[in-house]
Amino acid sequence: MSKPKVAFFDFACCEGCQLQVANIGEPLIDVLDIVQVVEFREVMSEKWDGEFDVAFVEGSITDEHAVQRVKKIRERSKILVALGSCATIGGINGMKNSFQLEEVGKYVYGESYKFFPTIHTKAVHQVVKVDYFINGCPIYQPEFLTVVKCILQGIPYYVPEYPVCVECKLNENICMYDRGLTCMGPVTKAGCNSWCINNGNICYGCRGLTINPNIEGFKEVLKKYNIPEDFLIKKIEMYNKCKELDKS
Image (tube, rainbow, N blue to C red):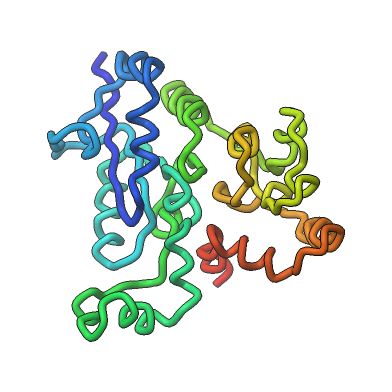
């Protein structure tokens, strides 16, 4: 049997998630034994003009050219995977949606903004069908490998819908709030093994909100530690602004 043909593509992003893949190390060698990477700009110059068994798409969709390009990738792919926060939830790029597009264009390009047409930032699934989601900014390498195994076995991967706080407690971390810091763990979906907190950082909410985030409970936490509620809104919008498009 021929190996499944795999490709990586990028849109509006820093390409950090693809670098995470390239830097996996020895476990990646095992993956490469059973798949054929036919296109991956970060690590190879070759291009592929046929169909893909699996296409990983990093980055959010921010202009009409990107819309048409991702649709063509979808047409050529049996399975499409949204890779990283920009692709799964719109990510940092979604903050543009808080402003008028003309205002944003002028701020970035000055009077030449008309030569750089833009649209409201969208996550990949808001434009085309997505089969698997790998969250994070950047992605958590063990989760990437788990998703790849699920794809190759033809089984679904279920992103955990409990908050990062659950994993944080299991890892016996001291709560960031008890350390005098703020953290998005109470409303952010798990799956990263509380990676940032384990290494002394806070949770920024890069994996997106749980399906039913306990916002009221989070407000109680903020009240307990005398933190203004507008902190919550600003932090949620940092990664999750594109979620509002799902309601329209």
